[in-house]
Image 1 (cartoon, rainbow, N blue to C red):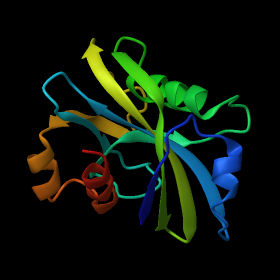
Image 2 (image 1 turned 180 degrees about the vertical axis):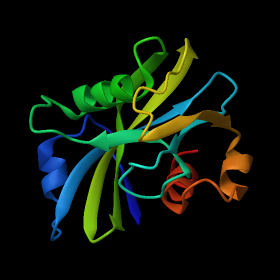
Image 3 (image 1 turned 180 degrees about the horizontal axis):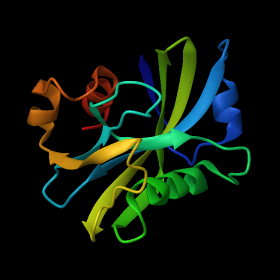
Length: 155
């Protein structure tokens, strides 16, 4: 796993610098509330991996997405519904991890939870949402190791 901070909105040129076999591109939003607690979602039985564990909200970048920011906004709405008010800023980094024979390259966004209801829109892929303090997330047996790595890099 490695993380690279960026100071601009990520572009495909940034992603193309990561030359790996079997590369897939994704987006992740690291969301915190006004108290600095981190919003994580619990992965469901039909998730790609790490079922039952907690991680940041994110997903695959689709060919139909016009930008990485559009992709993370779409992913968040698909997973948590339209009622949660999340302020998503510009991209802040690029994260690489190797999972299940796939080199995932994720564009990372920072988000601020303002208010509203987080809904489980895909119950097979998400069991629910929970806010963790940084300390609780890092010491938890139910938070993925990749999520812990990212929390350490971002917070």
